[in-house]
Length: 353
Ligand SMILES: *Cc1c(COP(=O)(O)O)cnc(C)c1O
Image 1 (cartoon, rainbow, N blue to C red):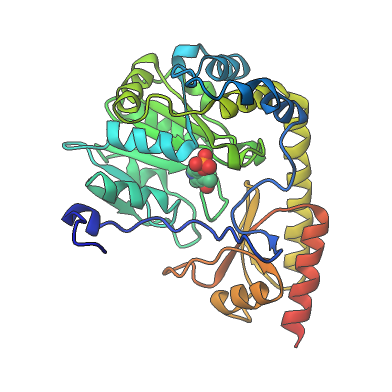
Image 2 (tube, helix red, strand yellow):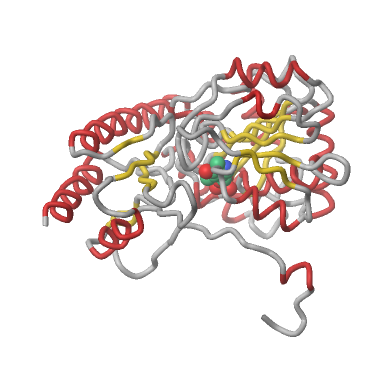
């Protein structure tokens, strides 16, 4: 800490990203990336022409990307904003919609970035515990007057809330904004995007990091009423007007347009997930019902932290959270079939000793 750090920044509790080792070759099942490369059309889009145009600023309106997203999801471009990953969009939303007089509510077990953003912007957070079985009780939010943030499917549990329940929350109080973070929805959740035209109090945030294999491209986006999107743009233009770079705009638009490739990747992940859940359960693990591209599982025999370390020594990275209620669990990204087979082989070796 330097002597120049402000008291506000000194109080932050930054989000810890999953390890991205640059040295050793691990089987990487720790950050929910796709095991597949991006669409060949997205790769093609960033070759050549776009690279040569890097001397020019990118389009602050993100026109090609927003148009492609609007078309794909049956909305108008004015209902779309794109960002440098959905973390940035979430940041805009926390800044825009969770301030003085409103505050924000989210579950105790959810995406750690909400906590980090809350601290960064000095927001008033209400933490609502999930039930003992990690399901979310929508009734807990019905009378909360501020902004509600729900990751659906949730991270790191992978469990989803039915769309009908979120609709009930939206209907209960049109004065309350509900932000639904659908980072994992393409792997089996129920999307709230179809509700956008009906509800002015709904913002849906998605990302190309997981289901469209563009984690390193940093492309996220949100859908909402034209008014909500205009509010987010106020924050964006006060912070980073050229927030999505040229290469990512081109890659993102091409990825959205390649529907067949997207569908085949999502289907492969679902298939590998079913295989992995079965293999883990056969081996005595408890696995929460996942609608995402990861599973949240506990061995029962070995504490989560110890199993995480033993897997790492054996060359497999998974995610472990040293946090009450979930300390016994590991979050395991669904990789290729070969990767999941290697995981099971290694677990068998480690746990039979
Ligand atoms: C991965 C993730 C995001 C953000 O990902 P970006 O790479 O910033 O788009 C947002 N929400 C949840 C729940 C996530 O797991």
